Length: 300
Image (tube, rainbow, N blue to C red; front, top):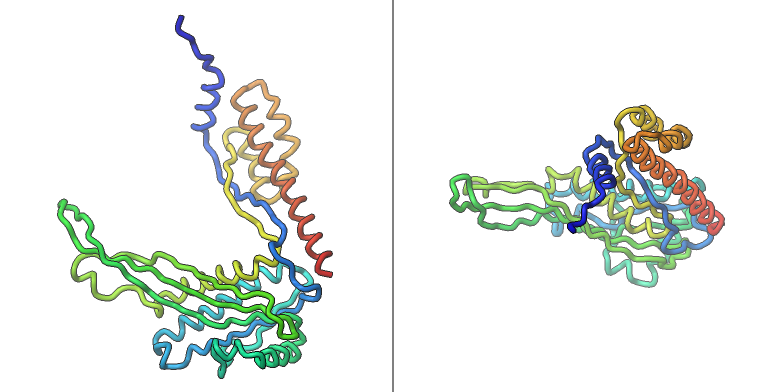
């Protein structure tokens, strides 16, 4: 005899999938990948890349390089200043007279020591080099009439190179931050003329440099991975979700526990789902607090 499937769980699944939901940002926090020296709470940031040398950088591109330097400093601050004990000072956004080669000489350690002494810093973040480019690629694509037309894709590449020093000039880490972003496409023969430039993409340059800095310095700090979950919103869940999204998930525990025992199977299932998310949020907060507590104690 042909087997008849029990439809109940299937119906619940369809009901859940078809229900209204709202996204909520979740995160998991992990310990730092690498350790900083014990006394590492006072950072100084300096840019050694001279983007005003006309032989290397075009005049119209200089503002984009300045934006990269500023964006890098923003990224450093976003990570370093999560540590309540830390401070980040700006030494120079355009320190002239140095090259990538000269920074490899042993006597460059004296420069690092001098800068750290001047600012009372025990760590120096040096932006050694920056490379910004807009690259394009031609290809054929289909037009609305079914024929072929020429197209051109543009991508922005922002590469930054950082060295992290102790106040004694010892190299702790060297990091290449290589970021890129799709900018736009152009179509038709006339569309081949012009396109995005570094000058008109300064905001994107700054964003990419910020991301690079966060990647490079971030390996020395606890890291939070962000992802998205969905909360069910229909009926009484809507009001409860407001407290969750407002950053007060603990207030949602008791009402969700009650709704999870509802005689309405659909509501009970949705409430149980939201309750699981709330518990995970609270658990992750405890984990995050413990990770940062251990980090601060380890650095003292």
